[in-house]
Length: 164
Length: 170
Image 1 (cartoon, rainbow over the protein chains, first blue to last red):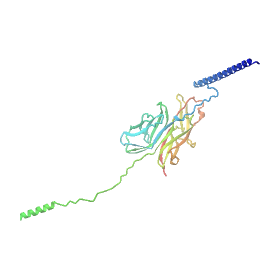
Image 2: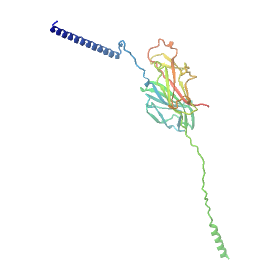
Image 3: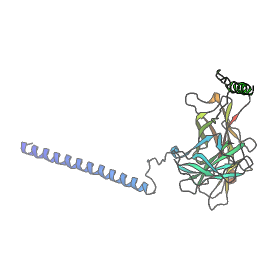
Image 4: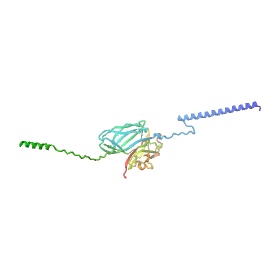
């Protein structure tokens, strides 16, 4: 084979290799494009591509309500106006509706919705209390989601009302 | 004579008026005690699950922390508001079907209206370092075969936790 023919052959081989490499690159890019298309199709709710794990992890952070528990409340006897500290802890993601019941089930106070980090310090009772101790009363925390409608788990805290 | 008598009487009166005033010189003091007392009530925080999510959370943990209580007191937590089947009703808007879940305490005992205790925690079971404790309980679908054919969807319900810090004898 002459030198000239050899050089021509090498050039042809180089061009062929380059063309093959370009074809391979284009094919790989085409595959990537197809897989990204199929992923965006997944977000639209269509059937996922085989081999893709469709998993939503459980989020435990939204699921807790912190309830302040105190076993006694001091109120003024023979007065409807009272000074207390009823509050909804800042960390909560719900409203509180706080009610106070005597041991016989008599409701003596019910709040409006209390937002997280909100304190209520002045309340008006529904009836005056005599001086003494009212035992086995209940401070009832009814919890409502931030939509203001959906009821959530709540708590009854057994308290003693000490009137002075 | 009369003059002498007047002088004498006058002198007697003058001397009679002046008297020695005796001041009580010893200091007066007294002491007594008045008892002043104020009660600081026992307290804590309780963290409860916000919903009864039977699908995601058949076992629930309840944390109690910042516990301040006396040595002869215990924390008692009860499940209140159970229905006549000792269950929590779960309902779905627009459906007539009511699912029911029973509650079991940490030892697997069924919680009932007559025995509603979820947990009883005394001082020995409270971490002195963190002043906290926790307990677990679980839900179990009551009569699951009754609900075959029930309308699909999300059924929700709520549970009320009653907590008290009680004095115990001994």
